[in-house]
Each structure stands twice: as C-alpha cells, then as structure tokens.
Length: 289
Image (tube, rainbow, N blue to C red; front, side, top):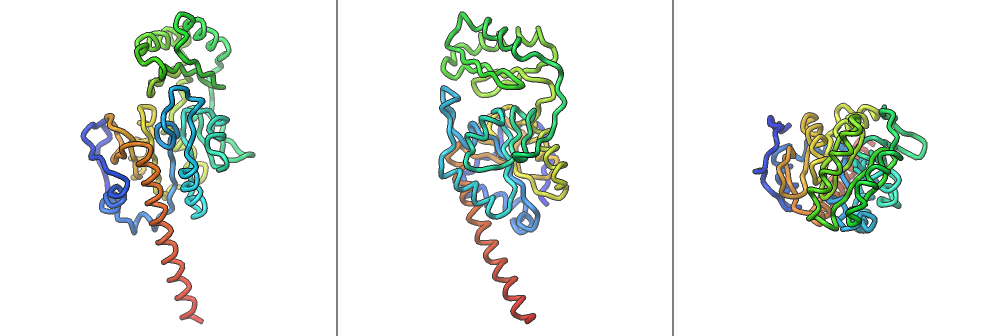
C-alpha cells in the first residue's frame, strides 16, 4: 500500500486530469489492491459535484453525475455525501439517489430514512443568533444569510468586494457566542458549533458501519474539507482536492467537470473488473462441476 507521510498543507501537489489520475492512483496504490479491498466513496457537493452559483439555492448536480453515482450504488459500493449543506437540502440536490448524508459539516448524519447518528451539541439558540446576524447585515443587503438548523452561513458570492465586512460580522457574532466557531469556505463564513468537523463525521460513519479495512476515498474542494483529507490520509485512503489551493490532499482535479469525468472513468473500470471477475468465477464453477 502506498504511504504518504506528510499531512501538512501543500501547494505543490501535482494536478491530474480525470484520465491520468486513475493511472497515477494505480501506480501509487496498485489498482489490484484497491479493487481487492472494500471501497467507500465520500464526496462534498458544492464545488465538487455541483458548480458554484451566486445564489446557493440555484445550485444543482447534473443528471449525468447522478447517473454515474448510481452506477457505484449498483456495484454495491457505499457512497456518502459529506457537505456543509443541511441534510434536507442535500437530500433534494441528490434526488433521486437515497444515500447516507453527513450534513452541516457533520452535525447532522442521516444514514437512511429510519437511522441517524446523533451528535452532541451545545445548547445554543440559533433563532437568536440568526436575528443578530440579520441585524448586523441590514446596511449590506447584498450579503446572503442562509439559516440552517444548527448553523448560520453568511454568503458574499454575489458581492466578493464585501469579504472584509462579511468577515467582521462573522467574528463580531462569534465574540457573542464563544460556543461557536467560524468555517471560512468559498465566498462564505459559517458560524456553527465547535463539534462540526467533516473528518470526525467520516470517522463516525466508518465506525458505525464497522469498516476498519475499507479503502476510503474523499473528494472535496475547499478549506472545510481539509479535516476530511487528513482523516482519509491517516486511514491510508485516497484524498482528492478539486482546485488549486494549498491542501493536505494527495491528488488533485481541476474542476467539477473533471470530477464527473474521473468518477465515470473509475466506474467504467470497476464495471470491466467486476465483469471479468464474474467470468472467472463462473469458469471455476463449471470446472468444478
């Protein structure tokens, strides 16, 4: 098994397009070893499966990408969304797929319609927090407030020139509520409880499904995904960063389209492997008979 020893942020990771990334991973890990281990695919949504939009409500996952993800499901490979979106919104974005979702950076973990993983949360009145942010944003109506069950996100996608004002508002609110932390993502500052962490969410899910020997894969694109990259690296998995920013991930893809292409290439390879494996198994049965 290929082993990376570093976990520090790096801006010099090689970039790979979708086609040669699988070749690079095959060289590093041995694709035979990859396919002989149970796989588990984790992914972010915005900036990974879905392009960014100035209004987050306009984001969507292309149907072709959803079809590719369905192929992984058909191959009995667990796929799990780990996103800053709420479970409710993520469920709609991923429809008609019904998969586990770790929403709000892991504060909500929904495994199925009947099963969830609880997360201990500090007693916070988010209604009051939302009111405070709304009041602070009154002089700047261009800023977009996204109220979630366990967090509040302040978007400046439509007005990137207001980054410093958005940052000041976020830190002013945090000073009033020390139980909160700030996640700085792409064109957003999000106030949420200290326990929100995508890496911890992945650990909880792997523990819950009792998958100690799984080969985990995570694809994400921004600063909030770094804890997930760290967790995947520690598990000797495959961490893939979308974009050019400094990262702990060991591999890169250029953009959302490259992610879809990579998933398609990987899916097609799995299909060929499973077909060959099925033929070999059938041949062995015929010989025994």
